[in-house]
Length: 181
Image (cartoon, rainbow, N blue to C red; front, side, top):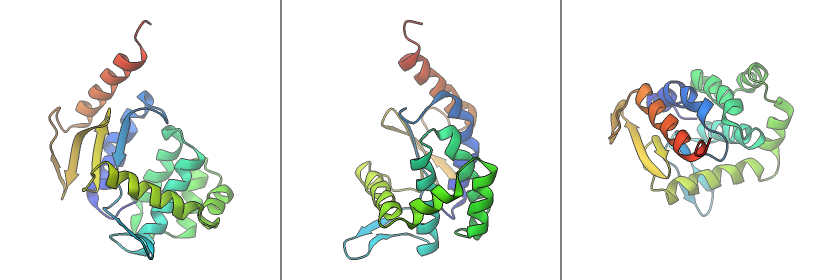
C-alpha cells in the first residue's frame, strides 16, 4: 500500500492483466510499497507513517494467507482504490468480503504477536536486498523490467504499456512453462 499514484497505477494497470500467467512461485515481482527503512530500535519506518505501515501489513497478510496472486491482488487493489481510508477496519472488512479473503484470519495475522510486523520487515528487507529504491519497480526473471517514479515510466527497455508487460509475461511463461508441450 502506498499513497503514490505510481503504485495504484501499477497494481491496477499492469499486475492484474498479467495475473493469468503467473502464480505464487513465478518470477514476476512488483514492488509497490514506498521506500522504507529498517530501524534497529523500532522495526520498520514507512515513508507515509504508521497508517501506511498498517496498510502494508494488511496487504502482506492477505498475500501470506492467499499466496495465489489471483486471490490477494483483488483485495490489494480494493484497498489501494481508497488509500486515504487505510487502515480503516471497515475498508479492510469490505475489501476482504468483496474478494473472498477471510477477515477474521486477516485480522488474526495483523494482530498476532509479531506475525504482521515480521512480514513487513521481511518485505522491506527483500526490497533492500534487491536494490529497489522506487515505489513501483517491476521485475521479470529477477531483472528490473520497468520503474514508475513521479508518475513517469523509466528504464522500460521493452516498452511501458500494459500490453508490453503482458507480452513479456506471456513470452516468459511460454519459455519457462510450456516447453515440451
